[in-house]
Amino acid sequence: MDPAPDRTGRWCGLGFVLTLVLASQSVATTAAAPPPQTAASETATDPPSGTDPHRFGARTLALLKSLEPAVGQLVHEVLERNPDLARLRHQTRAAAARADGAAALPDPELTVKSWLEPPQTRVGPQEYSLALRQRLPWRGDRSRFERIERLEVRRLEAAAEVLSLDLLTTTRQLAEEWRFLAVEERIIENERETLLRYERAAQARYAAGTGLQQEIVRIQAEITRVDLRLSELRLRRAECESSINRLRDRPGGTLVALPTTSTPDPPALSEDSLALDRLSPSISTRPRVEAARLAERSAALRQELAARQRRPALGVELSFTAVGDRRDAVGRATPPAGNGDDIVALSGSLTLPVWRDRLAAERRATEEARRAAAESIRLVRSEIAASLAEVTQRIPRLNEQLSLLEGVLSQQAREALRSAETAYSTGRLNAVDLLDAEVVLLEVRIALERTRADLALAWIELERATATPAAKLTASTPTTPDSPGDPS
Image (cartoon, rainbow, N blue to C red; front, side, top):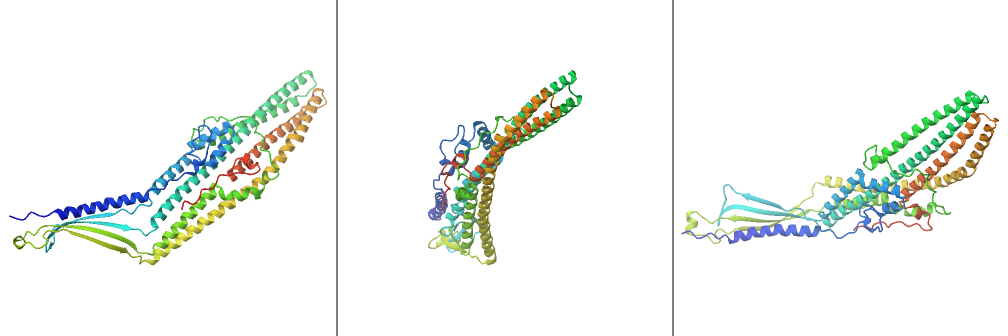
C-alpha cells in the first residue's frame, strides 16, 4: 500500500502566501489613511441664511454676507447652480479620493504556474507554483506621492474659490448694469410723459393761433426718438437677463428679480482707504496667488521624485511550489528523504535605471514645470497689483464726477428747465428751446445714474482684486482670512 501523501507543507506554504497578500494590502490601506484635515471653507462662521458653509470659501461667504438681500440671493443661486463651479467641485472630490490612496503600496503581483508536463525532481514531480511579487518604494516616496495629491486637492479648492469670486463679481456687475438700465428706462418713460404733455400744450397753442405746427412736429420727432431709446434699453436689459440666466443655468427668458431703484451710495472713504501700500501687502493671501503657490509646491515635489528615480527600485518575491510524491517504481520501493516536500523560496530584485536619457529628460521636464509654476505666481501677483492700481485711481475720479453731477450740474439743469417752461408758457420761447432744456436735464439725470453705476462697478472690481468686502477695506485696519499653511 502506498504511503499517504503528506500535504501539510503544501497547505502551510499556500496559507503563507495568502497571508502575505492580505498583510501587504492591510499595510497599504493603513499607510494610505489620510490625516484628519479641516477644509478652508470650514473656518467660516455665521453663513447667510440658506448658505452651506462647506460649499464656499471664507472669502466668498464674507462677500455674500455683505450684499443686499436681492443681489445676494441671485449670487447664491449662481454659485449653487453654475455648471462650471459644480464641475470643479466634483474634480476636487475626485482628487480627494485619489489622495486617500496615494500613500498605498503598489499592488502586489500574484503569479500562478501549472505545468502541463510536470518536471521531475529528486523528491517528486512539480505540479504547480505560486509567486507573490511586491515592489517596495524607497523611504519617503509614498509620503511625497500623498503630499502631491493633497496639494492638488487644496489647489482645486483654491481654484474653486477663485471661480466662485469670479462668478460673484460677474453676477454683481450684470446685476448692477441691469439696475442702471431699469433706472434709465424709468427716467426715459418719465421723459416721454413730459414730452406728451409738451405736445398737448403745443397743439393747444397751435389751435389758438399762437403756435406753429413745426413745434408739434419737432416734439413728436423727439417722442419717436425716445421710443427708439426705450426699445434699445429693453433689449439691453434682456441681454443682461440672458447672461445672468446662463450663469445660474436657467432658461434664457427667466425673469430676474432685482431692485429697480438707484444704486446705493458708495462707502465713505477715509484718507488712506485706497492707499496701495495698505492694500498691496495682502496680495499674497489672495486665492489666485494661493492656487499658483500650491501648484509650484506640487511641481517641486515632482522634481524631487524625478531626481530619486536614479536609484534602483527594490522588489521582493515569495514563491511556493507544490511537489507531488514519487510514483515511479524506484520511488515507491525506496522513497527518498523529503518525498513530496513542497518548495518555498524568498528572493529579492532590483530594477536598474540604466536608461539615463529618459531619466535626464524627466528631470529637465519637472524642473521647467517648477519654473513655469513660479512664473505663474509672479504673473498673478502682477495682474492683481495692476488691477488694484487702476481701480484705486478710478474710484476718486468717479467720486469727483458724482459730486459735480449731484451738485452743480443737476441744479443748473433744473433751473434752466424751469426758466424755459416759464418763458414757453408766456410765449417768449419756442418749443425747440424748451426741448433743448429738457434734453439737457435728461442727459444730466442719466449721466448721474451712469456715474453711480460706474462707481458701484469700480467698488465691485476692488472687492474682487482684494477678495475683501468694501466695509473692511474702508475700516482702519482691513482684515483678510488667513492663507492655509503648507500641508507638509
